[in-house]
Image 1 (cartoon, rainbow, N blue to C red):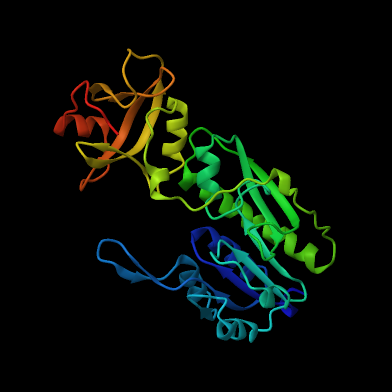
Image 2 (cartoon, rainbow, N blue to C red; image 1 turned 90 degrees about the vertical axis):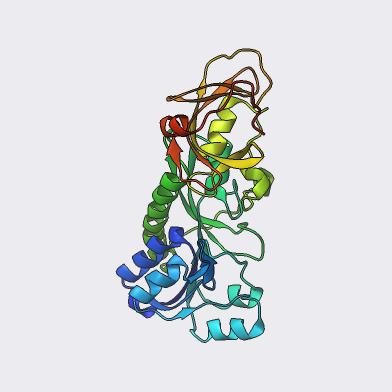
Amino acid sequence: MASEVRMVFMGTPDFAVPSLQTLVREGYRVAGVVTQPDRPRGRKRELTPPPVKVAAMELGLPVFQPERLRNPENVRRLLEWKPDLIVTAAYGQILPREILETPRYGCINVHASLLPKYRGGAPIHHALIRGEKETGVTIMYMVEALDAGDMLAHRSIPIEEADDVGTLHDKLARVGAQLLRETVPALLEGRVQPVPQDDSQATYAPNIRREDERIDWSRSAWELVNQIRGLRPWPVAFTLWKGKPLKIWRAEPVPGREAAAPGTVLSQTEEGVIVAAGEGGALCIQELQPAGKRRMTAAEFYRGRQMEPGEILG
């Protein structure tokens, strides 16, 4: 049956690649792949294809990259592939009604949270920032609202203390692909019972803004640790030192501290920079990156740059 069902896959970042590869490996007929346009990247602003495009080309699949999917001409072009099922994973745009209502098996999405928690574009970041102990993947029908469709399957995994956005992303990408491999046959055979989401329990995970990246030293040390790992390796939390951004890559809480305003540098050694945080705690910065410099350990920073006790980070 797999080879008889025409699919269109829609996705953009690395998270979506294992799902696309799994569908092809399982023998499904992927008629085409829709992804975001190539974007300028890096210091040289070179035009770079999204990871899903790279994977699709390696698999020999047709690729369509509309800037705005809702454009009627773009809708028409997608539907020329005559999909029986559309599968999306972190595509980045809400599908218009005409597309949602066309495939006979519907449109389904692989989302990196346990819905209805963390609807939106940055569920992995926000789960870490808010100190969650568990997250997962949900596969649900798509509707004309943000991640609000009926759920078809879900799988949870623990969030470990060592996890950051990078490690958790990779785990969830693999879980999502595996869950998709199990769910699609059941869906095509009519063995899935959709479950409506409880909208009263919904929380949201909007895309990370610049203000979300800046450290507020009045927060507790544990909250700051969660913020730092919830923004690593992208876009990376920062504070201001001598008026310039100082990226904080890794830190840990330290018990107790002398009386000082939050953000005050208490000491600097090769082991780290100790900074006063809120609620009587302190943070030991272990990896950091001054403006215009590379990422470095606290020991490397100590050998080249000094922070004076009493300086204020902001």
